[in-house]
Length: 377
Image (cartoon, rainbow, N blue to C red; front, side):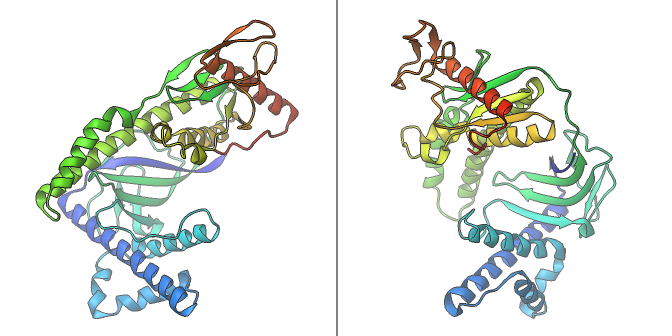
């Protein structure tokens, strides 16, 4: 199947390239914030609707003014794309998919998007508009020759690392069918409990670095605002956050890929994560687990590689139901980790029993052709 696929790599710019990118980031951020202010004022002060085409005309007029001539020193494509991103942000807001667009910060993550007219890619080297030399990219994997690169996004995170993302139109082929099927019960002590009886320990990336992060943040709070030492302390905090994020992403990608490679059918229980995070005793651990990201990865990978992902209703009594005889007990407190079925006498590990019930329900849903619940977490 043909799909859009992004390949993200780290690269190391030369001092000249870094300065050019800094200017580009600044111009794109300025255009986004300036037009966000114009659209906001137009609506709340004059009840006028301003869309993408109006902001594009404003930007053209702005570039002709002597005080804004510096906007012409960088490639026009990323600056123009920032207006499209603003339009998308407003579209998501009006569709109630996101909050009202916020202003971009100078000390936050930066990005610039280049379309086909602003870059050259020959399969080995990438050259960006307004730069003479190709980017020094560390390729961690090979981009297929048949893949057509349509968009290049240059980004810089808060830890000072530069990344390039190449969005391609690529052909993804289904994997060889297998007979294995698995049910997954998500948890906190163990990130995932499989119907096979395997328990996968949660990485707890944030918890393991919590004390060190708190120490660095206390040091940062004591530094004078605007000082060089404050910038150094802030960078240390950002680098630790980046380490936590990278550790979590690495774990989730490896686990989701393994599940896709080994199983033809994957059944998983849907969870209302936003509601669960209202429990302040568990909110931090739930956020650290990143269940939503894991399910998102399973969704697109199963679609790409010809696997079946089945979502089970969150109210399905997977923990209270005996996987041997089907008897359902009335109550099952969270502190009960092992229980005996009063009907058949089978002794169950709470989580493994739940995973087996999730698999059974998923197979029933798959066979009947109905959806117990959409995979939405």
